[in-house]
Amino acid sequence: MATTGKTLYRKLVDSHTVAQLDADNVLLFADLHLMNEYTSPQAFAGLDERGLMTLMPGQNVSTVSHIIPTRPEAIRIIADGPSALQASNLKRNCDRHGIPLFDTNDALQGIEHVIAPEHGMVRPGMVIICGDSHTTTYGALGALGFGIGTTEVEHVLATQTLVYRLAGSMRIWLDGTIPPGTTAKDIILMIISRISAQGARGYVVEYAGSALKGLSTEARFTLCNMTVEAGARGALIAPDEVTEQYVLSKCPDIAENPEWLAGAREHWSTLHSDDDAAFDAEHRFDVSAVEPYVTWGTSPDQAIPISGRTPVIEGAGEHGDARALRYTMLAPGAAIDGVKIDHVFIGSCTNGRIEDLRAVVDVVGDRKVAEGVRAMVVPGSGAVREQAEREGIADRLIAAGFEWRKPGCSMCLAMNDDVLAPGVRCASTTNRNFEGRQGRGAITHLMSPAMAAAAAVTGKITDFRKLESHHE
Image (cartoon, rainbow, N blue to C red; front, side, top):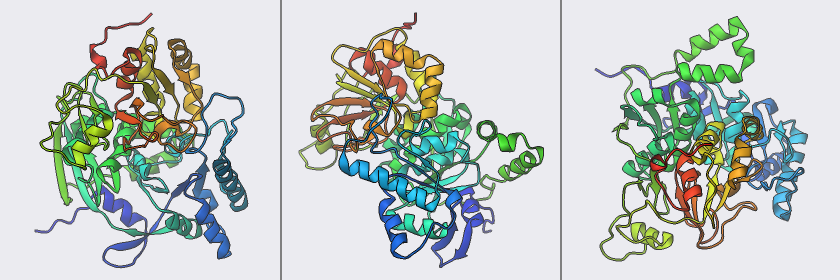
């Protein structure tokens, strides 16, 4: 008997389908469209050429994040000419089209995937798009988020819709209890290392299983954010009590209105895959024994537990593991624990939230940044930065020798002032470790905030669970 149930993914798509174009494509309505400075200029130019204005400016939000300097200066000035032009063009376009903008010196400026949820813009059941691949982040709240290209940005501005090619459905079960010291970052690195960087290509992934109950909303953001590194077109987690608590804390308009709250809860309760829903592919992982993970190569799937060793390569090659080991200057069969680092970067849309910074300061205690190591902390938004300062996190990190920066994408990618020199080895909480991602010739090891904190105070990749408690 054929199944009649729907996956959460199809429920979200069907509820936002304006028209069925053919068997594989629909015209999809977007509840929210986020923009940044580097994927929008051509889209606005295209509208101008056609004499069009943004159809629903209130359903669009912009921020300056990728090119912005993060030096802790009272007034931030983008010194690079082309970058400054991108920022000024975004402001001019947003002003002309009536689109809200978190500009360079806005106190609440930040990375789009951090500011949107923290300001209550993201709610379960929404479709959210952005000219950035890590829009998958919003699946943590039961919203379908995905990245689009510049041409598609123009179409969304003009119509608030998108010609959308349907994806396959994949379910990944996470069973067991998450061990102490293991984080969502470790779990997603483990998953990608098992299924490969193309293992979810063409699919929207739905996470399920008992282990999800052990993940906060911010941890779920990390999980969904990096699912795109397995090639996924989206990531979803069905809303639960954890989701509701987070959303209502950010959306007082719902929480304080009994009628709206009842309606929201009724709708959110339908946002799950039906028991008889069929998935195109499934994977199952027991997280009970997952250790902290670290990448050793130049792709997020080249990751191993902290107790592991780099692969032993048979024969030479210009591609794959052999090339990656040459780039990262690691020996085949070498332990990852103990590899010396030069730089630590803590931030990004993957791990730049307040919970991440709390984890960092917990590991640091009253230690100091190791001699010869430069360590940077870049909050994901102005709101995160302000909260960290209120909680005393910033003062403790500064006292330990960390640089406390202004919000932005920063050293996640070499698109701003924060760029690593060739040969510099960085312990990073970001999402990609591609060749040159943080600077030409720079070497990136992805890890959790706690692991990055341990690297900062020891000067090497270190299992933070083995550090003695070191608090004042």
